[in-house]
Image 1 (cartoon, rainbow, N blue to C red):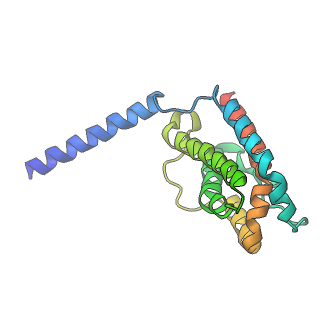
Image 2 (image 1 turned 180 degrees about the horizontal axis):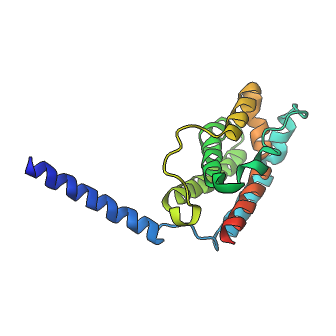
Image 3 (image 1 turned 90 degrees about the horizontal axis):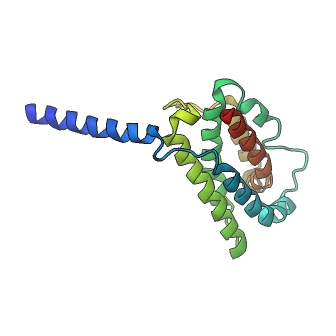
Length: 179
């Protein structure tokens, strides 16, 4: 029994050391690097935007729009960021793959940057100040998922077509956090 206790304490202390390294800034978000990432996101998006917007024939429906304005107000911003990153990385980007290699390359670039940002949000709690566990989705993201699913297979066109709205929100959110 003492052996098990010693092993448990050792594992806990290793985990605590790892956590303190993450929070010390070793693997933390660098606001100075964000403009370059945002520029790359926008550049890759410009190369695929027309294709996805042309396929979106639901002009009267917006997926993101004003919903994002509510997303970062107050202490919910980090949670909303995590939920939006999950939405794009788990639902939208995998469905956005096309027959065109150049489009897939740009979609992959966007996915890689968003994935890196998601990792930074998780690792850098000092900058983002996120809660560890929010098991339920926020009402805002629930609404986005609802509209996305209503659009069925065309939801991906709407979601990719409106990525610029997410990028604008992301830029505002990071600026707000830096101030």
